[in-house]
Length: 141
Image 1: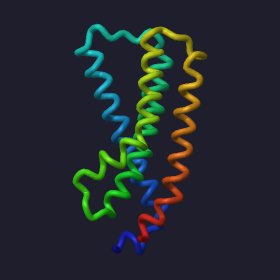
Image 2: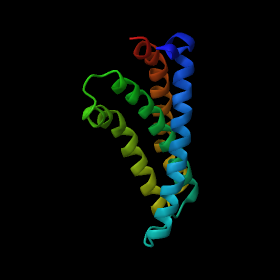
Image 3: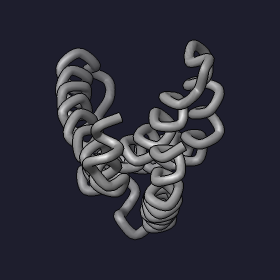
Image 4: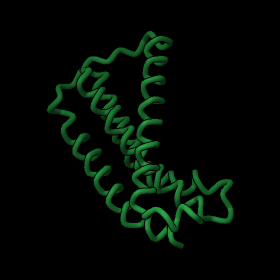
C-alpha cells in the first residue's frame, strides 16, 4: 500500500519491466550457451538473424510477461491463470520467433527475415504501449 502512495504507476511499471528485461537477457544467454554446448546438430547459418531474433524475442517476452504478471497479481485465483492468459498473448510472438529461428538455421539472407522482424518490433511497440496505459488502472484498482 505504501508503494502505491509514494510511487507513480509508471515508475513501478518501468522498474518491473527493467527487471524482467535483465532476467530475460540473463536466462536467454544461459539457455543459448547451454543449447550450443549440448546440441551438436543445431548449426546457425545466419548469425545476424539469430541474434536479432533472440534479442527481440526476449524483449517481447519480458514486456508481455510484465503486464500479465500484474494482472494476475490482482486476481483471486492465481493458480492456473497465468497459462490461460499468457497463451493467446504470447502465441504471435512465439510463432514469429520460431519462423525467424528457422530462417537463421536454414541460412536465409537477412532481407528474407525482414517481415519477421517487422512483426516482432510491432508486437513489442503495441504490447509496451498497451501495457503502460493499462498498468496504472491495474495498479490503482
